[in-house]
Length: 368
Picture 1 (cartoon, one colour):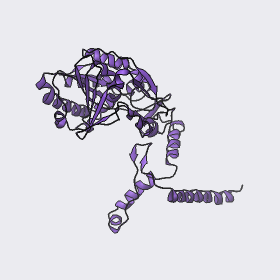
Picture 2 (tube, rainbow, N blue to C red):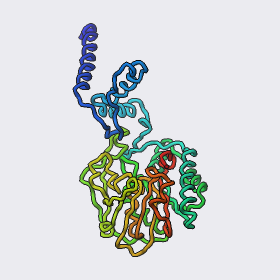
Picture 3 (cartoon, helix red, strand yellow):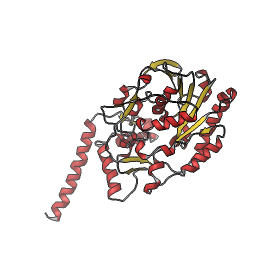
Picture 4 (cartoon, helix red, strand yellow):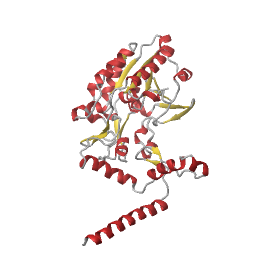
């Protein structure tokens, strides 16, 4: 083929490609939500003299075209593969893969965020626990980077320093260490969270340290649907899907679970299987995000009660502590103001556990 012919064909191909993509974009319905990025997508902005004059229309239109671009997810995957394979990058937008396990860099340690978390804990302790003479327990759940990052040449926080920093800043808590019981294999390949079936020993240690004995045996139940965690979509790196297993027992089957959404009690399920088909199947554990949840155990051999201040890691751990208590109350101060907790929770004669992942402690801005 002559050089002249090439010069004619290449612009024609590009014009056809661009024109075709424009046509596809015009006739393809806009998407409201991206499962991949777990966020709402930009909508077509309103066109008016005012939005044209102040420049907001073009700015919003650019966001709209980027969000609604045809085959957007396919191009995201191609871009991620190219950055790793062709350009030799070790991470893509902060995400990396070790074999099939995907994680997001958590670096550096943010002392301002750690102080913010401790200040919230101080308030809860001084307002609700100190008057009842309660010494709370603290469990810091290492995020997946603890086991993956440094050993594979990626930037990593000094987790020992983080653990010491929080422990020393909150001396009124008894720290329960669990990091030696976990490994990278105890976390989902494509998600931030730990696998419930892998943390029975974690629950046993926590209960033992709090002076409680667990006495339950479990049946493993596997979701029919494959589990694609938050990192699978956000990273665009690709990986095999996980299996999501949840544990049941005769004791757990008889539990009474009450959700307090905005203060209104509503009975629900320990495992909300309707969530399996949603945007995040991990939300089958205690229905995901909820301000306050109580689990009552009619089969309890004790009158002890436990209150857990927690993040999402507590959703899958709490059921494993049920056999040691008559009632467990979970409080998530990302969704309820710390100053309002006393309106819904009675702390008298209760064990109290603060259970938070290092990821949340290092990014604690959502705590209220």
